Length: 516
Image (cartoon, rainbow, N blue to C red; front, side, top):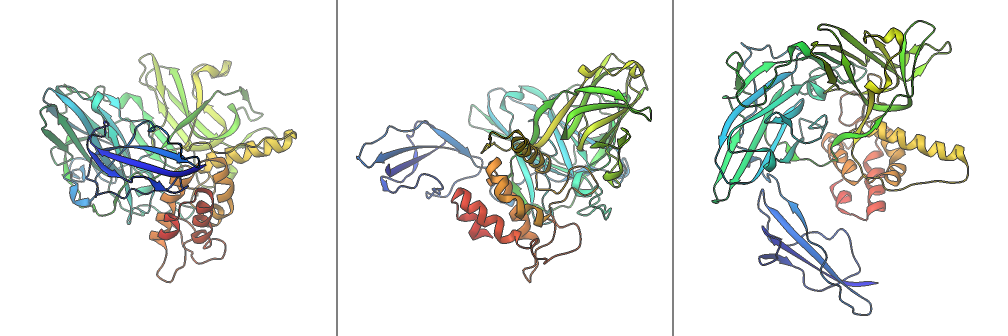
């Protein structure tokens, strides 16, 4: 048994010639949740650490392999970037098409490391020199934006080059200003999209350069004409601006940007697992319903998006409508979706094989009604369609299997239910016009959730929003983030105690109890 441990932390190098903190030999059986207790850390710095232990026979281990963590921007005053949005004279800020923002800049030789810190309101995708930065989707996630807005950090050292470089971002409405809840609220947090990015580049001569969002960026719209969480996305490939996020692109017709007055004090580093594509599912069949609709069957109720390939003439319009079930006659059934359209519309540019997946939306579905796909009257080519499963990229924790196949299937259903509803927050459903973080649902499911997946970061992030939204008299809203009326109900309000207590029982970490 472990009887003692020692931890060493080194700043800036992994050879431990610059030890910042050394616990010495600590007589303890504790092997997790040991908080760092050294001098204050500095922003944007990598720290290396290693561990050794002694057992009850006083045998000393060798040092563990070296691991690291890296600090981000530790105070809001460290932000030099400005929130930017297109000038309203050039682009209507209330228009539906997603914004494109770009900036060209030049770098010296001898780049040793580069980090970009950034976020957006509502959702963003980031590009550097024509390539996506990271694999995260629906960033920066959904938090109680007035109180807390996550920023993300990306290591882009390998994507930069000497000379001209281009940063670009696409901005959609998302949860920030899109339609939310069965009450059909819009602009809950604000009515202007905006971006905030800050790039640090370090050189081998010890110098550093900072590139930030400011009024010198250029703006346009592009092929994403409409994108909403509940309703889906409309994409016209004819409007794509080839090379817009690469150097050499002519942006002389693009519009000016302006600085948006948004706060920095609510910015926090990413806390939850990022949302990503975690699995790809092939459709098992296509068929024609009694009503004459052509339908894909994914063989599995899933949450995410359809990705497809098509070779179609310019202007051809392909429509995908997503649903969970068929009715008693075998026709695709949309009645349980409420007002959520869950519809993807794609217009082809007619230049050979085109590949598309929606950007700022997700659907809950098993069946997909397909309209306008070339040759679909002869059957859909299943190999041209895949379902991409999307949720918070949590690590699996527990498994269950027994001799009864029905019980095993029940457990598989539970896991799929969790995957479908743990998309950045614990929701009640992934398909109709709701998809809210119901506190009552979450507290009932918390123990099962932590059995199936490592949910420490997931619930830490969500509980901090619960804390931020809790009313002065202690009442807890019925959904977190709070976007509908109602608070203080038994069982729903109990989430404030049951969830942190269950997290503590699972991981032994008292810090979340102290926070809550």
